Length: 306
Ligand code: CP
Image (cartoon, rainbow, N blue to C red; front, side, top):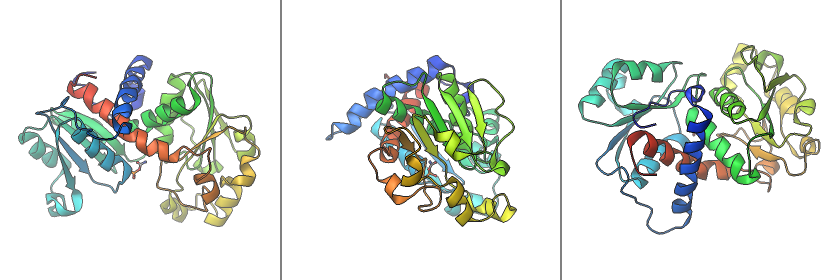
């Protein structure tokens, strides 16, 4: 994977996904052991985080991942950069490239922004989310979290619940999970269900109760409240009633079902507090695993020694 830009998980083979997960296991041990976390794998490398949209988890974990690997990392806040003076994405990327960076981690509202970046500059581009298109590192950390808690991936059933149509997480998870031999069920209001996942291993449900019966994992997506104005679901109250994941609903799922949520959560809407903080929830694991997965991605693409 040396020199490979990471724009979408659908460009990853199962073997490449496996190599990222294997590297992440090693890095997770280093994070968990406490004490000195700083390695020298990427000493002398420079990474810029370029985020045009808000982020807590992805941006912070990429920044920590680069620093733990010994790279120099700079994060650009679009609100205090020359982007507010109208500088184009192309010129911003070229300006960063001219400073001699090795990788640019970028989040942008436009679908295809990361692919565009690979065409206009030479550093490795890592997509940290582009519109509703892709969020590859999220899909990898979701796989890693499931494998850590369940001991395997192949053969597991996962229900992804919520606004599938506009979710880059859902899109990336579907490709990653089916590639690793999982069965994926998609559930949400009809207006929020896609028509583009018409392939083996994916089934679309309009009933949440049917979708979660017998699954090993439920991945609860954030309601994108901005979509409500577009009339894609009746009200948040109705959404919570029909598609909210709460204790009552979990009685339909297996006792050991694992709960994921990419964050940030709308508590009481798509997920209840009891579910977030219950033993079956792996939401905090996802955050911790995000650092290990992002260390693995940076190390493998920038030529560390994992
Ligand atoms: N899951 C995720 O992308 O979270 P952030 O928006 O906080 O990065």
